[in-house]
Length: 85
Image (cartoon, rainbow, N blue to C red; front, top):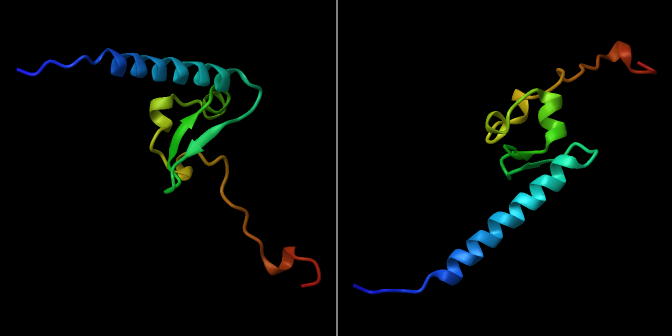
């Protein structure tokens, strides 16, 4: 049996958890809509303001694409609507 002192690893993990908690607290209490997406356009994070706007829990947002939370359909522009046409 090989014993290893992992106290440094455990300490580093605790510091990361504490840092993430502080960042989330800050992001949830600013007067702004903040979200993060991955390279595929799926949500990784949404702050409290965004969650309240969408009336959704973080668990429902993470991994979701834009289509799930779009507020309205894109406007269609016809030639009649464009000036000079």
